[in-house]
Image (tube, rainbow, N blue to C red):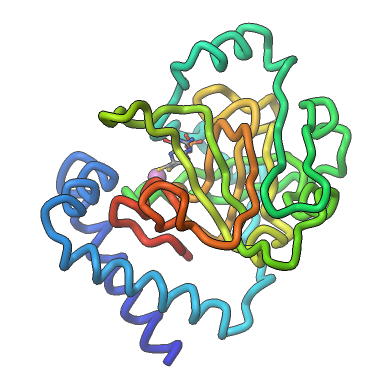
Length: 263
Ligand SMILES: Nc1nc2c(c(=O)[nH]1)N[C@H]1C(S)=C(S)[C@@H](COP(=O)(O)O)O[C@H]1N2
Ligand SMILES: [Mo]
């Protein structure tokens, strides 16, 4: 039942935040949990499935996350995770003020797109002041400006079998034996078309800083911070995650976090 699912998830999240405040930070802790204790990982995963199903069943699909006023912005957005992608391509683009940035929209679409920064900024924009909750247990309120992801997807015309939107990012977050692993995330089509889901290029009235994901990061306001991929270069529409990472749809989901990180 949906009710049970939510209670169970809330319980799990409390445990998760409690554990992460004890030491280094949620990311590192869950990463090691994933490697050493697969039973715990399985519990997180089944909770994720139930949560996502419950959220959709309850019909709250287009409910808005709370929006704040400028007076509620009390500190700058705390940068977390990658704060400066190291690749030479990215470095050169940053030196040029991202003038040459292009976003690709690929995969299961009728009309693949390549969009310049200027083209994105000329599209209808939305500005929202929201609270960013990191799984590590901290929050920041900031103002975000960008183009609704749904608008960009409509231009690309998703095929009927497109089920998820994958974000591919510039930053290599880890090095494996087979080379750098770049950050990746994904959301479903319902969240992709949510009115507050935007591809943000502005923060607190200024261009998005590098530390917070310049030139383009996504805001998915009803989920936790790790869903909000920074440094996006490609948006890919897919039917399944089978060929992405370890098959669970996101860098952190592949390391034991919930794929659906509803708040
Ligand atoms: N590409 C990329 N996106 C990312 C991350 C990252 O390391 N790389 N970290 C995630 C996490 S855990 C959080 S809390 C937020 C942090 O966003 P901020 O730096 O703007 O606060 O970005 C998310 N998106
Ligand atoms: Mo986070």
